[in-house]
Length: 512
Ligand code: DPN
Ligand code: ZN
Image (cartoon, rainbow, N blue to C red; front, top):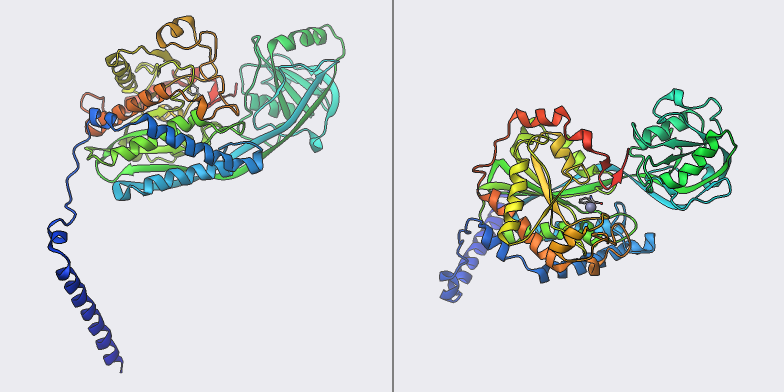
């Protein structure tokens, strides 16, 4: 019996094969001669890849991304793509699906990592009889006890509040006023917690408002506010004269630990020992849909990745969509920390694309020089400069100070750089002269706000900068000729700390 069964099965499969053969013989001949020929793809070429970029396609994607951001409405009452939200999960799905459609051109991976996300629902600070307008709850601050207002005397902390001795022995149960400087906001909040304070107020050492983040949560953090130097000055004077100031602090906030995801796509073709890597961030802040920040970079990368699939490459191209940039560059930090020394070496250069379409834009190039950054950073900087010049356009240099996802690469010896179009900074007269737009107004008046929607994009800047992204990819996908080799020197520069001494930001947020 068993033998028969096998025979029967074998017979069936032979029959199946025969009928398939007959089928194919019966099909019109045209099908056979025109069987899909495997046409070799042309080697990627900058002009051709640039020509494939269309502003209309980008804008159509932006509309889709805004619809995805609306998935965040249930939980946040407005569109958002903040990590942990449905809007962010939808964004990840959108990126992954678009890449998966490109077949085996890319090897896709999802890298899961732990992240913290904070949400401030309400806050109020009262100092004496005043409610200082500049007071803001710090990012990742815990709530006040039982999420209720707490009253206590306001005490001035000595020096910068970085040392336990700076804290008065009477700090228990009080609200502490601490000057900005020398150590991180998180360290000050922790010291205030150790001293038994119920809340901390960190005031700016210069006049303007102070908004920042406490960074990594600590069990000793207390509810912490930022305050402008102007608002703090009269209160500091009063306390120094020995007068008593009573205060009330209230923060309703949560800090949650979640898992989130980086998406990485690497060409299956191309020399894997010589990769050009580029990234944008897939998340937004909680306050809005983040269509310019960083929908513009996210979608530029997706469009370039899609168009690149029509070409052959000599070197490997690796795209990254980082998560949790807005929470302090967490995704890119995690990725670089997880690289083995060998994997680190395979990345010849990292290019950051964050905020490419600001409405009141300037063409900004990170001023990444080889004396303070891994060698090769300056060659990349000059590639951008030369391209703008070839289009007859101006550019401005901006500080390469750790405000986006290039940070971990530079700190770990990998040359990097990038372009941007401006965030909360104000456009100068000179810039308005060369780029148009409005002097004295923010480059992006909707930065980190609800109005960062499709209407917030400058279509001209976006299309142009996406062509520059295409140029940067095509150039290095073809060849690294003339581009410095990776050497140990790069790591030495990073270790010397010329770069890290300048950085006051963890991503979009001040931390010190
Ligand atoms: N890293 C940007 C953000 O996500 O908020 C802000 C930024 C982008 C700042 C580019 C400077 C340059
Ligand atoms: Zn950003």
